[in-house]
Length: 114
Image (tube, rainbow, N blue to C red; front, top):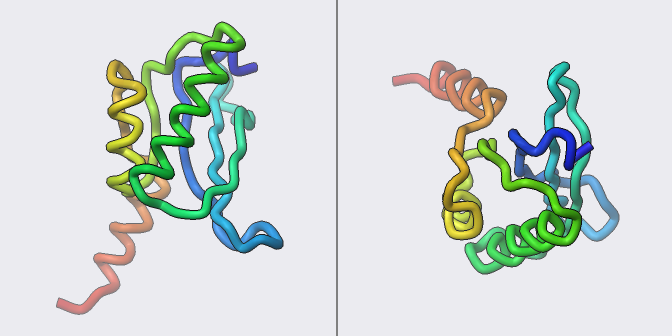
């Protein structure tokens, strides 16, 4: 699936999903029909630049090993360390923020008294 639909991939962390209590780094792709497929998973022990650099390098290795084209667009949350690591590893990819995370942040800001 990843080789067939490499254009848009999402990088995100899921929390409290495993017995190790470590964030689960997920890479997902999207088909031409809008369906989502899982491309890669990794457990991480930190959310610093170095940790994300290791993860993005691992994804790059997978792309190279299986002759998958680099993504045109990468969707992430607001994690600046992840965005920085992606900028180093995937320089030509356009980074976009996930609409779910944008909407969650807007709702949070609207519910906060001024």
